[in-house]
Image (cartoon, rainbow, N blue to C red; front, side, top):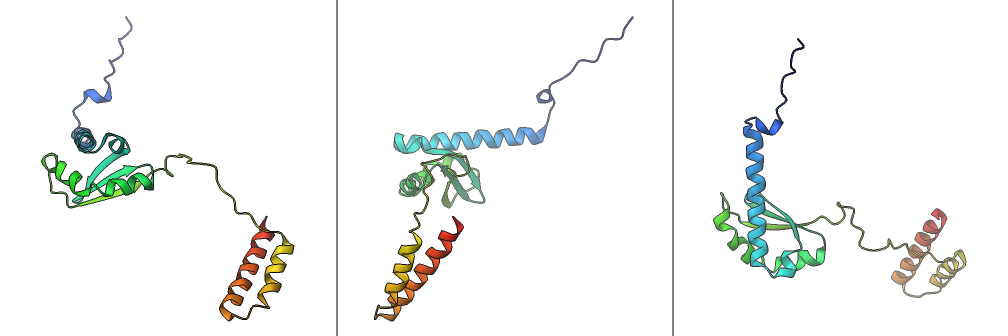
Length: 153
């Protein structure tokens, strides 16, 4: 009679303290995020993607600098709201922008418009007739930079 193969247990069915610790951390972060979103205006609360507490610092992650700027106005409100949920006191709030890391493209990539060689020469020649020394040096530097950039394209 063929022997029955041993049954397979899912890895989640085993007792694992490390995994349990990570799950508790994730749950705490979700509770904190929900609490922060509850005390903020609805539009602003939706802009917070993730939160994390690390070394007495609350890290909030959002998609853009504009939302980060708005969130900074609520620094004291946010820190006061999470006090009952944290194990250690949080003293600092830091906002990080994750738009570039997620592959989110906010608009078409802009490319610099380099003037033609004739216009670059015109800038260089006109700079030699300028009496202000500082302006002359700036125009010469501009013409040399534009010439270098035009040779790359």
